[in-house]
Length: 129
Image (tube, rainbow, N blue to C red; front, side, top):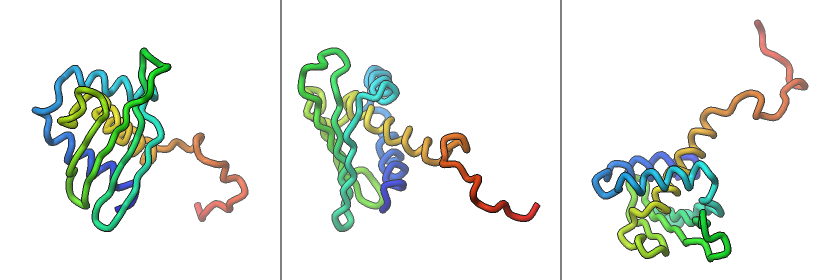
């Protein structure tokens, strides 16, 4: 499973469990993703299992240690999610939601890169018109 596809598969599995995610967690998670508090994302594949690790930096207490985020999935679904915060043990805290939003935003950016955000192409010959 490539890093590009992990976001689709993990995201679909995560968001399908909407009853476990509170509206406050959704709101705070989106804020963390949009404002860039989810960083250091690492995707590791071992056999059929893929692990996503990240850090959720604090929005208010910037001098405190960031929360550690972990997701584990296989080819088809999310297997486990964990955050080091006190609310993170069931895996649906705002930091995990923020990681999921961040993965979704990365996928959207990858799929919809404007021509002005890409390297210049002037040196390449155009095709037939």
